[in-house]
Every structure is written in C-alpha cells, then in structure tokens.
Image (cartoon, rainbow, N blue to C red; front, side, top):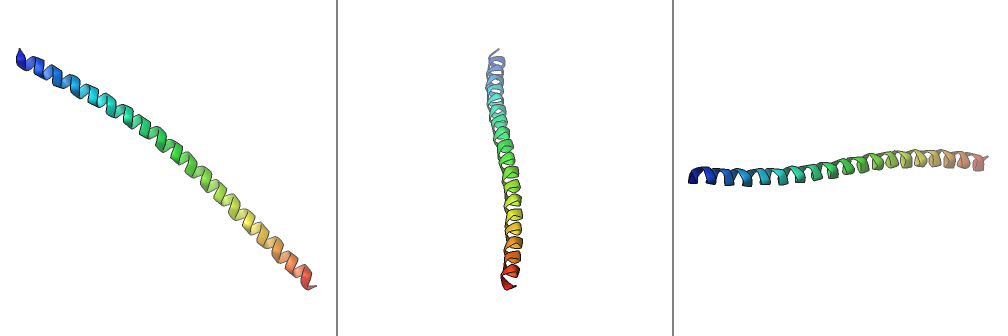
Length: 69
C-alpha cells in the first residue's frame, strides 16, 4: 500500500511538472512567433529602404547629367 501511495505521489509531481513545462513551451512558441513576425517586418522595411536608396541614386545621377548639360 505504501508503494502505491509513493507511486501516486510521484505521478502527481510528474504530471504537474509536465503541465508547467507545456505552459512554458506554449509561451515560448508565442514569443517565437512574435519574433518571426518582427523579422519579416524588418526584412520588408529593409527591402523598402534599399529600393528607396536605389531610386534616390537614380534621381541623383539624372540630376548630375542635367547639371553637366
């Protein structure tokens, strides 16, 4: 009977530990998803900035050509 109680107590502790770890895992998954979304937004902004820089370069080159005339 004592062995059964010990095993039941150990099982309860194990289940509680597993529940806590699952909650922590879910929280980490949410954080990871947010970070992935932030990364995508950053890459989109980076591409826009690169495009704008390219456009500005073209405009500056055009202005240089006009000034040389």
